[in-house]
Image 1 (cartoon, one colour):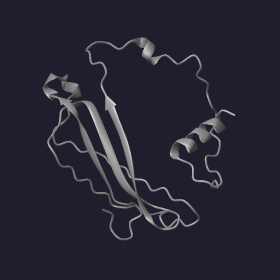
Image 2: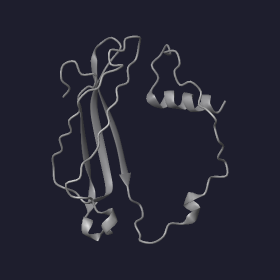
Image 3: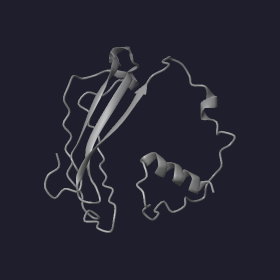
Image 4: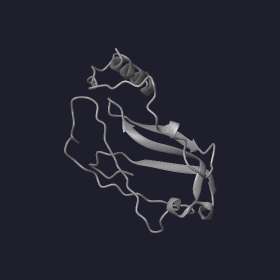
Amino acid sequence: MASAGACSKGSESETDGWYIDDSVMPEWRKPKKNSMGLTVGSVVTVGTRNDCSNKEDKIEVHQTGAEVGFAVKSMTTLKSQVTERDGKPRMLASIWGSEVVELREGPLDPALFEVPLDFRRVEGLKNWSTPVPRRQLTGWEWFKDKVQEIFR
């Protein structure tokens, strides 16, 4: 939950998954006990008002649940509050996950590190800020438009 005056809005995430015991993992891959994590927060503002331009919020992370091993399949749901242009709050949910499809011990294939044949260097990206469209684009529509602009 965000405190009064915070630029960040409250959010909550939940991760569920299948895990294997860390004891089967090589020593370098095992998680370090009592290690610290890092949380990075950002605020995206829309419109002409930007009360958060030079402000940092204090972010606290609270973790509950059992200690887990190495995730072979996990799904995370992030719920956060955003403010619409009219000032009304709205809850958004993002879901993402990962799954190990192959797990084996040994050297990696050097072909994994070769530059793809269709790779081309881009000296600079076009300006990503555009006028606000008349209709609200979905995140996917906005992303597709920006990628198409880069390759024009």
